[in-house]
Length: 285
Image (cartoon, rainbow, N blue to C red; front, side, top):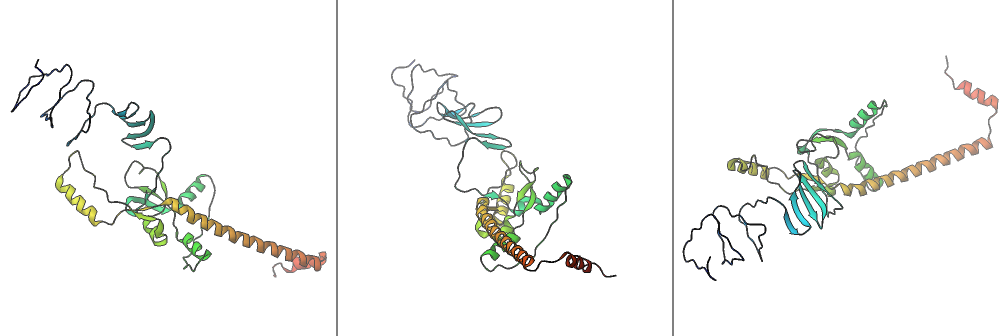
């Protein structure tokens, strides 16, 4: 038990415990060599700077019902009492409604394997259902402008099925496009993703190996991705062009049918002539 003030000029060694009934005011710094255990609450009036690792055995509260805490091997985030994000070893889940300015899907060729035309997967489904499907391949043509350019883009797009080489979704077959191929046809929808640091093996990792991996990552071309929402506008334009072509074909068919009906009314064929025409159109032996 001390009076109103304790002043230490040099160094003081304390035993296993220091008990304070009310409060203690410290100067500019508090240095702890090993470990410090506090009671139920630690209140900091202004700022706290941590230069190393911080371990929290419980929930990290920002206010009464906004916090981050561990629950059943998952890291849960709550905002005003509502769960908004869950992180697990397999990935994470976003709860509720989320908004993003830009969504870029990783689609680089180097990250994929088992790449094949999407028609192969569709034919497999058809065979499993006892159906058959045909496939027609059109040769590439150079665009001029307007509908011909849309037709050229549609012929150049190559939908494929693939599997990612690694990751939690590597076991699932995906459908999509190859960013390297898309860049030659629609470079406006291809983005170069920011470079990422190489993954470390273990908690600390080998510094020399990490340096080699970092140099190798810097020498490789950046990973490419596709802004898939932009393709909706391109495909919509293609569908509109296809619809216009179908309307033109339908109009021509109706005109031809009207012309045939007019010819039948003006020059009707007798049953004898119909029989003669049918007989004469047969094979000649």
